[in-house]
Length: 476
Image (cartoon, rainbow, N blue to C red; front, side, top):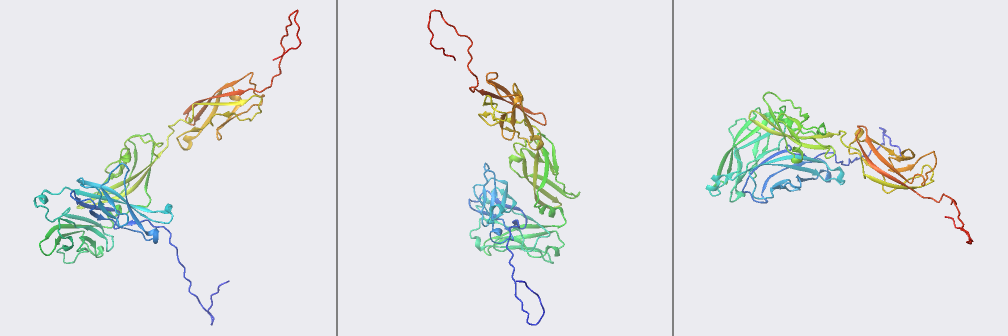
């Protein structure tokens, strides 16, 4: 029925509600960015939480439901794990080894169709410090973990962004303590600490403040017996600074191409503008399956350590860490770099077998298929034009047989007459596969000609012995 719009008296209207169905078109996004740093000590116990990651996805229902997991190689043991639902990072193996542990945590959504799944990757560094000797001497008295504290935050982050966390150990009743940040800035500060968790967050627009560095005294107390104090510094990085550029990871990976079989060759350079006052250093955060073959200089130049073999691995996906420093401000960025290994004509076309045998009946017509014990197939591991090849027959009788490359079959093909087993009972042929670069291989093909009853018996000589009687003569 046709609808009409009119302003005449007596006209009516109806409300039309259009519901937009959600499509899984958003990747999970880590808050405040995809770089996390946590600190702990070697004496933490298995199951203890050391921090929490948080990601958001604006899609609805399963498209926006986020799960977390740690990416790790099957042969590498990681002493940490993440709660798949909450993103809480906890200790899986105890005691911990002192030093910096680098983890990759993936946040992925849960669409109805698994092929539509979207994900994001966060780099998590966990600094594990040995329990201080003073703590042992003081017989486990309350103390800070990782103090003094220094945090960085981008100048364009919103209110509510988590900056870092003050953490303490050896507290008899953790629920009784409160956290506070003391400062001497009359204009106020854009940060505050949550009094029960110790988490420092942004509470005001950072653009209102001209100061880049804020120094605080972090206080922990239970208003009775415990009173701890330490230094806390928060650095604000200008939105126009290189640090913010590093914080913006692209959804499209940076791509380079490199020829195989070339050691110590330049792959490419990460082209970031770098001022004289700014220092950028790069490192590859992948496992040895990548770092044994590809390396990066401190200025972002990627190169091959050893020759790459495309037939073994044609794509390398790198996670590159860019460390930024400008004055007292230090930060880290993450980039996904894809290196494609381009093919070189370095492989011979190879027959599946070195010997083939077939048979065909004599007197057959042209076009008759040879009965082979195996179909003849050739494989060239190279790709593109480098993988193209031709197959030819050589040897006695090669002119009367035809090889079909697509079918892998051999056919009798001759206009000069049929096969005659009595003249040629067997054909010894050579199959030659050769690519455009002249690389080749050979296989032997033996074709036996089967007999057919096509000859009449011939009497060459009959002998009769005098004095004997012969009633019949048998001819063979």
